[in-house]
Length: 308
Image (cartoon, rainbow, N blue to C red):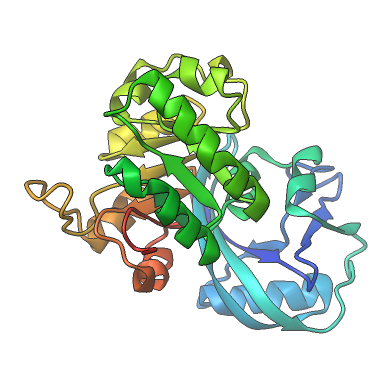
């Protein structure tokens, strides 16, 4: 079955709202809501297809855009590759030029709309930040480092603490939570399911061995589940177990794992291209690697020391 290459746009307005449109009833997945876009025609670049489709569908002209996520998806009757870009600026006033209803909604409101299955990873990607902090092994420095990262705009913190007792881990989580909440940041528990539940955590992060033991995501009552992965098989497992996103490592050489060979960007890009969930690059990442990571298909970067 031939692969249908589709250019898809995530368009934000000045208030941070996202534009969605409703598919006509006679179309494939008719009646559901979607992010605007359409088929990449022969001889077109992705950017050309995106510009043409948004002009035809909405009457707007793309001024700047950047990659967000690629989603390969296999319906029973067709195979699609959604090539999703964020439209950073545009001219014109968006209208449903083909008679389709359109709405501007906040990222959180996207969860109340029915989307085609292939669009669900896009909804997740829209709601996730570009940068993640993983707390260092030296727990004495954790509060200061988290505060510095929050001041630099980091909005997702994964709290490690493998060397801590359960009581110490709970105490450290409670110390960090008010600062994260005040900054609008998510504080994820990298510990057992029992710990995540006892803390009423919003997010639970799994090591690769906890991912292998996970039977179903419904075991966690919070909103987000993520996992650390090191192979295409683990990425597929994270997807099958209902994880919302993954961290793939090590992309570059890292002092924390000096004996592990880095993947490099070409391998990272190849593995991520087969995934149906957002993936962060981890391992030796620096702030200046954000652009390279996105070009390689990543949601962004995760790092321990990049936000010092």
